[in-house]
Amino acid sequence: MKKKIAKIMFLVTMLAVLAAFACGGSATVALPTQPPPTETPVKATLLPTETPVKGNPSPEEPETVVVPAPIDGAAVVAPATPGGEYTLKITSGLPSGCAQFDGIRVEWDGNGFVVDVTNLMPNPNQPIACTAIYGYHESEVPLGSGLTAREAYTVTINGGLTISFTAQDETGLAMAGKESPIESVEVTASDGEVLLTVVSRLPLGSSCFRFDGYQINRRFIDRIEITVTHLEIAEDNVPCTDDLPAVVTEIPLGGGFDFRRTYTVSVNGEETAFTAN
Image 1 (spheres, rainbow, N blue to C red):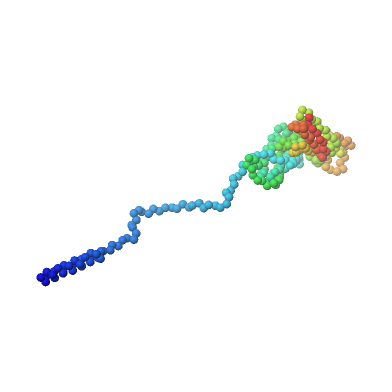
Image 2: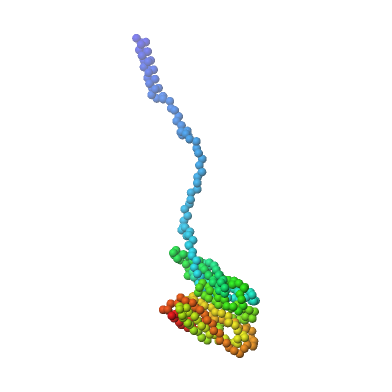
């Protein structure tokens, strides 16, 4: 009987030990801290990003147009020797800080030269602020060396300035140019055309002078400025003939005059008013 009880106690003790081991003796498995990579890394090149620039963007260049340049003065310069080249000197205007000199074009037809002087200006359809600065541009235009002595030639610049001059021989080239004293001015209008007749009385005898030419400036709407010149002996104490000849010069002013307007023509400072019939 005692042996059976001892066996039972042994079995109970063993079961208790096994139960305790089963409840508290489970094994601990170490978990990886980072899972293994599943893809092979690919190298990539990073493109630089644009950094925004502060401030206003640069404005586009304004469109320009070609326009006639205002003519402030012109003169024909004779050569130093016969057969030399005549030169036209022009002073053209730059009416604002936006104006740029463009160029000069010359057409020679017979005894007449037509000269066009142009500027570049901003397109009027694109309003642009320009500084109110009036500038000047000096130009020299060769008129050639084949001019015939004692013949008259005409230079028209931008349709508003006309210069008439006489090519000179050796004697004329040695003379000096002077403004002629004006005795009378007569204006005749017919069929829309205006003709100016100028009489100048020269202070020297006919042996000491020659007619040179005239210049017409029509830069104003209702005023025409004309300069009549002659050539005279430059040396002092040169004997001259006793006659004081009158020189009659006919100057065509053309058409396009408004019959409702009164015009003033100034010839070497002598002013005359007229209306076109």
